[in-house]
Image (cartoon, rainbow, N blue to C red; front, top):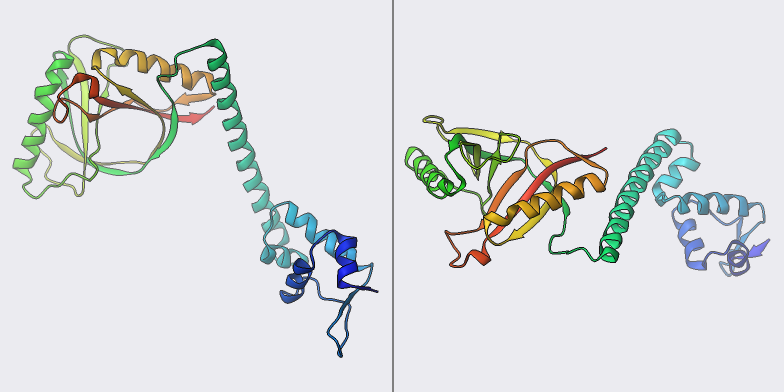
Amino acid sequence: MYRIGMFSKLGRVTIKTLRHYDEVGLLTPAHVDKENGYRYYTTNQLFRLYEIMALRQMGFSIPEITDIIDGCNIFGILEQRKAELISEQQSIADRLFRLENYILKQKEGHSMNYQAVIKDIPRYTVYSSRFVAPNYNALFKIIPALGEKVRKANPGIKCIEPGYCFNVYLDGEYRDTDINVEFCEAVTDKGQDGDGILFKDIPAVKVVSVLHRGAYEKLGVAYVYVMQWVEQNGYRITGHVRESHIDGIWNKDSVDEWLTELQVPIEKK
């Protein structure tokens, strides 16, 4: 038999680790000297130690290893860990693919004014209205009027903080005039439907997000960038793009300070 120090060298684990395994009942010494408390292990116990070490290297926790070795729900625990590793593998592959694409863009000297970020948009309650705008400039009058209409019909209505509103363009293509728009603004509670206003819950969604600083006339560049990013990084678009206006004419004096976020619903191909 080997004292704990020598056994730790044979197994390439620390004495502290062996003591912890003893405390939790995972690997108890073959013998403990009653007089001095020295712990002794046999070479046969190296097999048990190696099994523990192998499972630890697979990412299992001590309680999970205890259950596996004790024969409790072995396959359930193993399959759960397998699913976790597959998910981690897919996540790493996705990040690696995006990094390689970023490196390529840098080498090619492409402008990196835009950065794409994947984010989860939570479920919201919104009021919405669909209308046809004669042109994009008309939105500056139509949307504030909608908000005023909602507040008059629902005096207690409150928008969430920070605010979240967005336009969805329903035509499926770019149009200069007669633009089909749905405007949504997130609120804390549902109000009264009517007069072209509908309250509804919109589900959570995963999007790729891009920020655009400046005039709306140049938003086309941001759209091109994000659509190329989606294609080059192995995603597909699953819904209408949300054009969320964070800063604009209502709170910024300079057009150069206007801030718009494009949110493109996506899923992996």
